[in-house]
Length: 252
Image 1 (cartoon, helix red, strand yellow):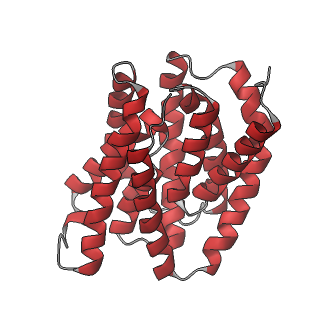
Image 2: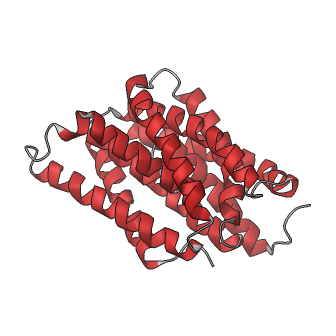
């Protein structure tokens, strides 16, 4: 059974689905769009389970579009700590009010964005940190926690890939594989919490064509912008996402 939405709510769901596709094909900061919109349509943490299969659909499309560009060493360095972060986030979901997720994640993302901005302004600061194992493990763990709590790890992983200075195609290809694997690993946890149901999967199936449409829109846009502007947009979207999360709770 599909949700009993008004026409306006269905329009918001459609916009959010297109946003998933765009975020998966190169602009991870836009991921906040679907996080916020689906949180308005579904109460509390329910939205995380509703959105997860759609994220996986977007990941599959992004992997297909950018399959030749992944940098596997970065996937391998961040995926194990991300899985630990997923377990930590799953544990926190039963212990923290969902209204606290947004401010916590927003504070983390804003701190990371400030560090990246300092590196851009003064390249000598933290020059060797992005290539260290500790940085990769820390960012992977944070990405795991934030993706489990609110499907909001796009800006976190975007800042990591920006810090290690990946070209935009490698950025998207690496991000696509990372999120496909971590989102698949999240499925048992979301299912255990009762967040994925036959009803939610029917809703997902209806929106998949819009996700694929967003993928091609995003790919077309990213292919046309210079690398420098791509980096600026990733950082700008991350900062905007952080402030939105700080000011507006995700749950209700």
